[in-house]
Image 1: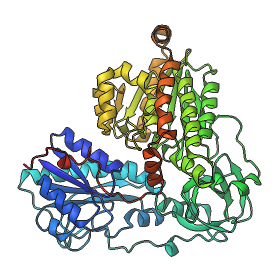
Image 2: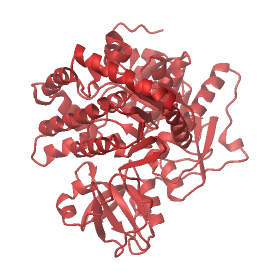
Image 3: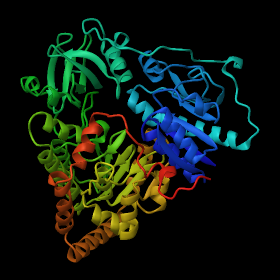
Image 4: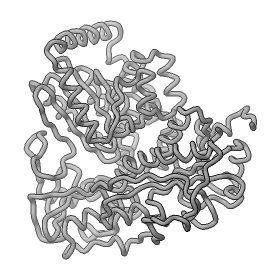
Length: 570
């Protein structure tokens, strides 16, 4: 069928649904929900047999839903209605939640039900639940709804006729419902409220007696202080005491600012706080905030790096490089780079780069420092001689993060992961991280250039099929970690390990003789210098709009197939 995806943005759920439906033979085009007239025009051009709306912030116009079947993906259980579905569910601590696919009608979220899927609600932040449990449930429910629609004999159920309805109409959650009382709220309450607002809109609060919104909270079980007091810092996070413990605040957004690591947003105040350092890179035994952590199991070492939204600043790249260099000296025969639960890596830190321009420094200079730090980290991985290296992608990855992963000897991706191995969407960036070496040697130059040019997201299965990755592992994050540990243990088998290491060294020496890595880097950076310092400001404009979350003014042409030159209405 021809299926139009109508969405507010090309987020992870929209990417996943588009890819899954395409793989099942459907013809997919995408339109951003910018205005009623734009949506009407897209429908007239594409003439879809079905419209699916994965992520909207306003109602579909009657001129569209009254003439076309429009399926809305609502992140709530059957009967749940309102714009703050996940927020209420997380803040109230429900044990089970779900996704409902319903047909658009005049009353919001009240149309007939085409499919639904439930899941156990994890104790984590809203953005993580959305990217993992919601996306997985929504994919299953949408695929079922599309099958039912295509069959032509399914009758969706009206909400009023259902006997077992779990949800109800809930109003938009506003800041008064999210407010924190540091003199009364325990750590569990603070964590629940901040997690329920993570991603957007955050919890309105004050730090150092200055207004801000809080994001990215983590528990602390050993350090204590007066309730409400900011008592310590660790790298980019700040520690604030509660009535029964403390919580780490990873990110904040100050008025008229952008979301930044908390210790950077309040740099002067953070500098005066005591540093609550951890002892080296080993994973802490007690729950705490630790963005880089190492652990070993037999002959396998696991290096975790939990960077918010997968963004890696210059300083974070240097710290991870230092941790990697340290791990390379360990006796482990296999070294697995685990990344984080939501993202493995998305490359350079655009928000930190943007903050440089806001503080009077140079965004171009910070971009240059950041890409060179990413390259140094990638080179550290590429030149690992005494261990088999694995990039284990439990979460999504994009841009430079994809090519940092491809610098490992093996790339194993969880089945639900989406990969975006390209740069051009960010103001026509050329990209670095030795992609011209690592991608071409896997796929060939023509296929590598096609991936960069077409800028399409890849499912884990598709990435494996084309040779970009080496394994696609089914299951949730926990099951993925268990399978990664098993597979890595097999790589450490002495019967094969010695031969694998010898072949790896021989290949690297042969490649270096043919063309040194330094030459690839110099060629890539020559292009990146033009992006950062050249006459075309496209990268700086795109970065500014990205970090400010500016509403889209049009749908990119590589997504909106119905707007391509030469498109013929079916």
